Length: 153
Length: 101
Image 1 (cartoon, rainbow over the protein chains, first blue to last red):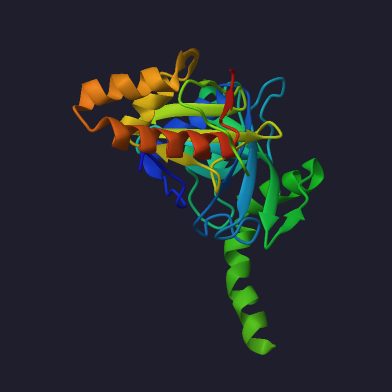
Image 2 (cartoon, rainbow over the protein chains, first blue to last red):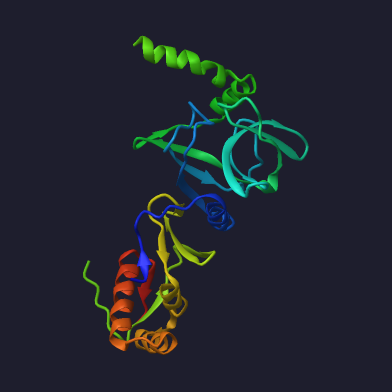
């Protein structure tokens, strides 16, 4: 047996190397995410499509794939602030930001979210609103309310 | 899918894939409508498989690949031939490679 198609699991640094290799060729890429840091906008097992920044400059509100230089892993979080050369990245559902990143660390932006075989639309207006709410930590604060609603019904 | 693979056939690699060796794991990512799928469609080759892949240059016949590998790995010619054909069938079926002649 020389090849294997069994649902290959690739994560961490190897995933970062592979996704970088694909995006460097200006090719879009789809992948599955795990974690809760972008809840409720991105949830566990969502399938995301990432587009490399080619002619576009990253904007506040964009959900982006960023390489964390400390861990060499890819994180998918939102740009909530922009300075001359750097971008402040934060997960919607976490209080602390990931810090400022240079554009070279940003591998692309999320253009599509697929959840339970349905596509969720992303638009600039929604992104800008979510960046504002993320800065205010609204998504973190709304968590108890969300749970309350589930219990209530 | 019925694929006619003869031992003197020549194959070459499709342009619609991205292949990368990551710490000894040779990964093939198909580009479906220009999008690389890192979720479901990835394919991995072991060291023998990647040695075959390196020789799919649009010039080398399968028989030459088999002979080269038999020599390199000091393995039984028939076993290598069978394994190479199975791999080629899979790669053709996945449209990672196509037949030149």
